[in-house]
Length: 196
Image 1 (cartoon, rainbow, N blue to C red):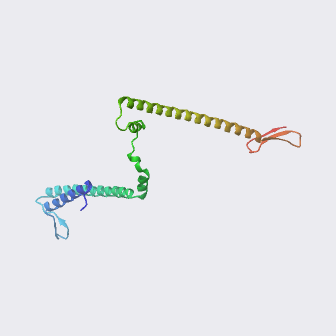
Image 2 (cartoon, helix red, strand yellow):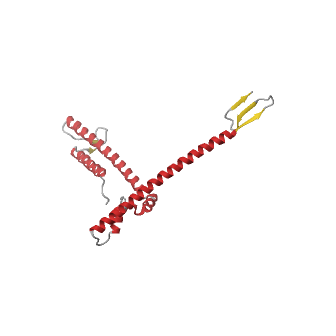
Image 3 (cartoon, rainbow, N blue to C red):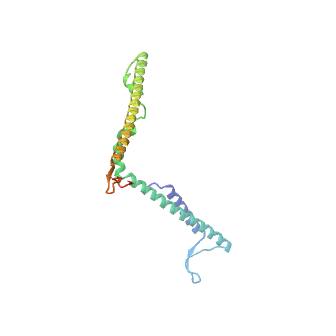
């Protein structure tokens, strides 16, 4: 038997309370005065009203619990469908050992590998200092490389803009017309200038 969810447990409890309420009211399905159905046998009208109000409130709670259970089942089905989705399996498989890797800068790992076994304190300090110098040189080199690439990109942008300006200036042509005036026009059709 499957484990019950909290919503299913709540619904089961409410349905049991409703069944107990029906038994306590001594409701009988008998034919009385032309009307059939669950007639309530009680000592007074006030008892009938009280019992009916309690039954309606409990029935409303059962209805809400059923809706909650249905929503919970939908969430579980959605989770199960995404869990069994092959794309999730593939993504997890492609991630590989990434989930086991430690997010450190690598100095501790390199230090542990370089000082494996019994090492004196002075050797350990020298190795640590050497690795830290190496790391700082690598970072400085990476920063200078990034700055150099940024300068190259800026220079390429500047040369590209200069080339575009030269091409735009070359597009202008001057043509003599019949009346002897000079007409300047752009080949792209953006602007016409006439000198007459």
